[in-house]
Image (cartoon, rainbow, N blue to C red):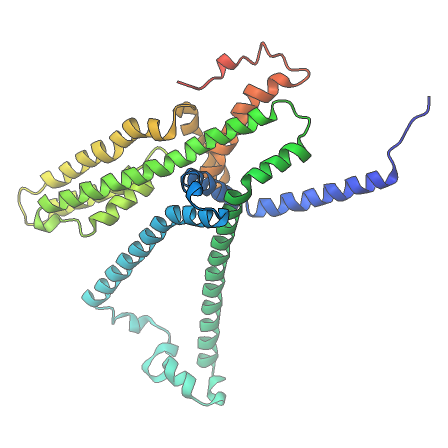
Length: 369
């Protein structure tokens, strides 16, 4: 019996394809955090796109508007927070005397050798040790800050581009994977559909829950400020409420990471101040925040905005373990891995040639409540 061997050209093209796959996997590994963050933003924005798309004929324009609906509140919050921080820093600098720092500074920064004088002196004088050291340090700091800012801009641009094209051409990408990569895989369509539905439920539900929590927080802290003692009034109640919305995205601790430390701070301020009978306010703030910001959104809203397809227990464990294993992006990568593994066991594994479907019983691994 004659044995047939693959044509040499087929082996060569197979090697080329393998090397290309290695390069692609390496590039993805270097940017895995940005990729999973883009996937999170994709699933968070897609329901908005589905509502807007019928009214706008241009797909690209509807994608940009949908991204603006999600990104604009984040940009406003970042700008507002930055403005508050800069204002408070300016207040501290005007309140306290930092002149003693001049005594600790380098002779380069002394009155006899200020930066302006260094720039106006002759080139020969710049070769002085102090002048060279000063210019070298300024250049090093400038380059490091420039590199940091450039890296942040590139990362933001990459996230924006990835999210944009996932929203615009995500269906084309799925069709390509189905036809050219896994054309003969049984159960692939059901597998992708289930993962797609669960990830949208998880990610968009978290974003919607965060927005609702932020709104409740803004209203609650603004109302508490109106009845608070003069010495304990919250200077930025809207900022505190919006930060609670962001805190709700963090597993386990949630909004407690925001209102907890603040409640302890004003309680300490109440105990150490001369005002009498003000301790009721921090107690009231913590209790009302726990009920209206922490408990009600988690119990009353999250099951409806996030759906009930996945049991919260395994998902909560995933949220806790994944950031420890992968880093910050584990907060987004963990749910993706968990959902993919769940549906692989439910859908793909029973269809494998040697799998015993009676062992892999869907009723035993069904996490629906």
